[in-house]
Image (cartoon, rainbow, N blue to C red):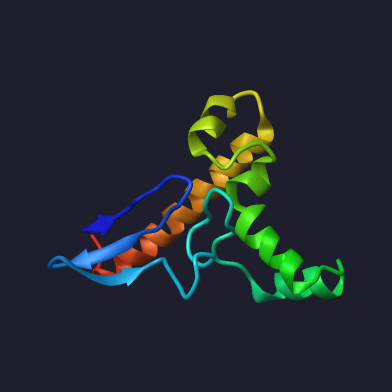
Length: 119
């Protein structure tokens, strides 16, 4: 069984016999799936780039990753998937945000299916 609470917050959990055997969650709420305002899994090189090249300090990077990324950051409109769905047809950024959200879910879902032994 894979449990998938999806919305502005999102995660997946592979379960066997009522116990978690793998999850998309990590040390903090930033890891795993992209969410409403959080980035999800991220290449650490992106953090170095933001600090070294863009000149952001640790606080600014934290604000960006926790509050300005994810669906909101990609769409430029909303952290709520329902609102993005309502504008998907007429706003390419909303469509792109939803496509990325779904792509990451599908990718992680495949990994969890593999952990459970496949189909």
